[in-house]
Amino acid sequence: ETYAYKEAAKFYRIIVEEISDRVVIKILNGIQREIASDSPVTENLVTEVLKPHQHEIAQWMSHRIRTVTEHNYNIYRDDLKNYIEDAIGGAVKQNKEIQKIGSIPIVGRQISSGLEQGVSDITFEAINGLLTGLSSEKNTKVIEDFINAMFESILAQEKDQKLNRLIKDIFIGALDKIKEQVKRKKWQEDDKETAVAA
Image 1 (cartoon, rainbow, N blue to C red):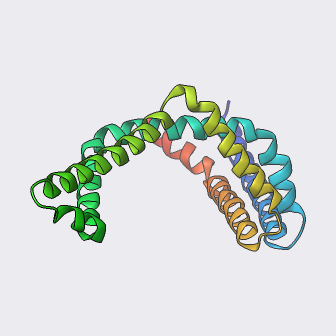
Image 2 (image 1 turned 180 degrees about the horizontal axis):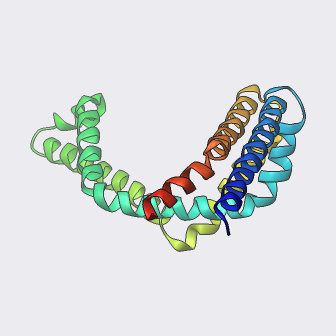
């Protein structure tokens, strides 16, 4: 290969890349305009792109919910227990019926204290069971069913303006990221790599 051939090939690659990048960006801009307008593109994106992957999305979200719940709950379990005890303790102390029980001579204070501890324990155990169950593998189906129901609700409310705006913004943002990638000058990066290697 001669120097002239190498330079011609280089300029050919640059021209092809620049032209193809501009064509792709022009197409992506057109798609963004189509999405931003009130065309059926957004509805089609939801029903034809997201809907077919609903099951996989639900499985992924279910796994993430279980993992995050399990990890964070183990870290904050004692904090939650203390918070519940403090919240119940404050509520019990302000409750007029419990105050009346507490004023019963000899046993009133013990009964109100026992009620406070019992309510705290019951509340904590209920929340503990809920969060432990949420992170359990055996409740995957329940979580997936819940996510699928939410998904169906979202799809049923396609006329919801806020939801439509959100979906449009997500797709437009994704296309912006693709355009940023397309705008990168691959030929310049290749030239820099070649210069460094030489």
